[in-house]
Length: 267
Image (cartoon, rainbow, N blue to C red; front, top):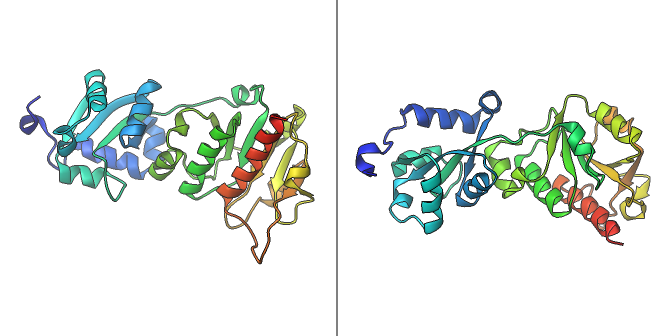
C-alpha cells in the first residue's frame, strides 16, 4: 500500500465526518448499529468476536505496526489516516493510533433471564459513562448473568463507556428496558428476589442469602433508586460505612454486592 497516495489527510473527508458523528451521537450509533472502539486491545477484541467492520490507523502507527496489528490489517478493511486527522478522531488525550468501527452486540431479555446463574445487575438511571463501563467489567469479573439498564441510563456505546469496559462490552449480556418495573416484576415472578441498595436499607448486604439467585438494583449517582422502582423491590440492603460518608460511588457499590453474590455461590 502506497500510504501517501491513499492516506486520509483531511478532516473534511466523508469517512472522518461519519466517525465523528458516531463518536458524538448516541442517535447516530443506534441508527447505524455501529460504534467506535479505540485502541489495539478493543479493536482486537472486536475482531475476535467477529464484530470488527473496518480499521483506521494513524500513519505514525502504520509505519511501526506490530505483528499483531499486521494480522488485523490482513484480515480486515482498513484506512491509513494522517496523524493530525487521527488526533481529531480520538477521544483520548494520548491516542494509540488505531480505532475500529464495530457492529453492536445485542441480546433479548428472555435469553439473559434464562441464564442458570440467576444473578443480575439492574441499573436505574446510571448516568456516568465511567461508572457504567466499570460496572460492566465488574459484572463480568463476578460472573453475573447480565446487566439490565433503564432506558434513561447512559448509552453503553458512548466512547468513554466502551473504553472503561476493557472489552467486557463484548462478553457480558445487557438489555435496555423501556419499563424497569416490569422487568423487576418478571424477575420476582421467576423466583428471583430483587434487592435495592439504599442508605437506610433494611438489612446489611452480606446478611442476605443470594445463593438461589438474586438481582441487585443500583440507583442514579445523585438521587439513588427512584421511588417508582423502589416500590417493586423484594427488599433493600445497605453497605455499612464508617466516618461521615453518606454514600459510595455507584460502581463501588455494585462491585461490593456482586462479589458478595459470587462469594456465596462458592460456599
